[in-house]
Image (cartoon, rainbow, N blue to C red; front, side):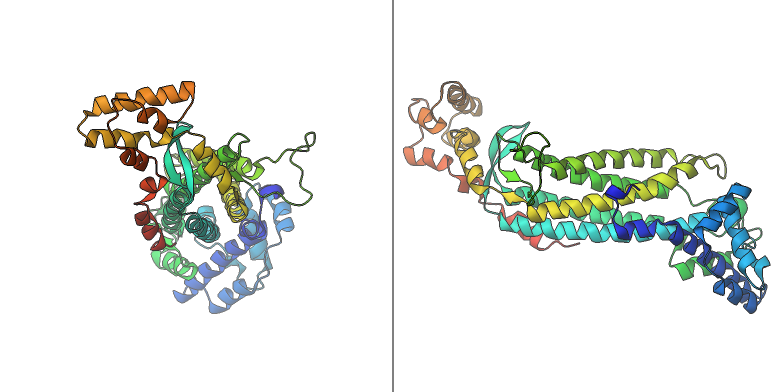
Length: 431
């Protein structure tokens, strides 16, 4: 997690001090479980609970000797317990601590991300209703298609965010599990009652058959939910980037007092937030790919996943957290140029209304192919030689629509008359 793209709450989740605190909580709960079973003493459980937090710097110094991070942690924690230190890590293997702790940390990270997605959903939803009736050119393949509304465009974002929220909520449930089943997961030295106690107190589910680890398809699902949300943000950001192009000019990212768009060209106002989010989305897909690679481990476990997870879990969640917050600010401050939208719609010279004429001619009894060719012939002439499509069709003897019928084909209202159904659905949707 680099400082430039890190926010305080997510950084705190993945901090070494928080990780070590969760490790200690797992160790303390385990001794308490042993005490409930009448094996360890209540005094030993209380002593482990009261032990000071393991200092990250001392932990690193000890790891330089042990060459094993959990063993170093156990050494320091056991040594700090006044009486009963022998019960620290009793019956456990490293993955009991690390994987159960990661279940806690991923759950905390998911909770932050769910809050961010919900914030962005609310911002997008509000702006969708603000511009529900604002006409804009719909484009396919980057080419004029038919009129739509800017609010309808934003409604598609809102529903996608609702799906992102659901996927993240499901992934949270998937990763919020632990295992305290010992080496290779047989419960040979740690009975299931200990696992049930520890995971229950942590609010985690239990991996039903753990081998020596919680299985990495869970982590892959979580990282894919992160990456999919990032891909949604990239879709939104790409739209802003296209609509902010000088030749289009329908949207602009906000521009702060004193901000500079270029070190060389004073006139520049660039979509830098959208471009930043686009780049972050590429990273997130890469992290998801690594998560998929981590699913297939050797036998009951190896540690080929370990080095990658130290990077991808904090980085992926941290970057998405940052990107969601930045996109929310972008949406809240987005400058919408409705006049330019109207100008660009008029600049199509009626070409975007071609399907309405096609259907009207078909309704008049023309075959679909004949109707298509009448409209296409006039549309191509409009493209190449100017004028408007309505004018050319009005002078075409094969176009037998009455003037009022032809004019009705060129009404924006015709294209937005049924969009209320979308906004009724959006009004009923929340996350």
